[in-house]
Length: 151
Image (cartoon, rainbow, N blue to C red; front, side):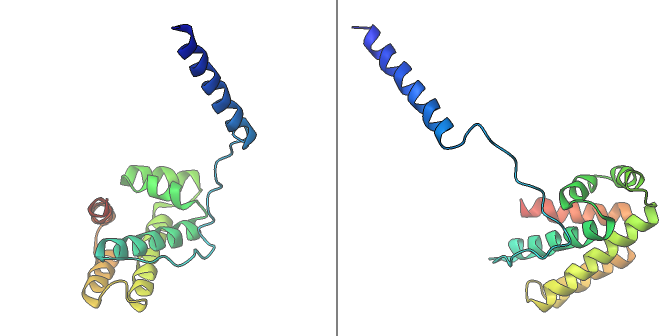
């Protein structure tokens, strides 16, 4: 009698594996990384946090496009100035090129976010000021802070 539950469990496990294989579970391929230069579909943004997130992601896309890297690679490099320097070296760019792209990408995204009503004039002005005037390390801290507030 005790063997019956084991047989049922083994049969269920085999059925699960067979179903997984039948629906293509053996041919998993990760989704390709999106081209940061290609337009992304519009996102709805409910609340200030999501609105700022949309603006920051647009800034990352714009910067990554200008540098010729993926948005994901850029975001990982935003952890520190040293990581950004390593990305610049890898891509054959100078720190000035990278810094200029980062600042221009942020300003462009802020302009778009303001024109779309995602952020107000005060927030836009503060972000533009940060992009134009803060030293790179401090600007990265501000961006990381904004990202951590968003989750």
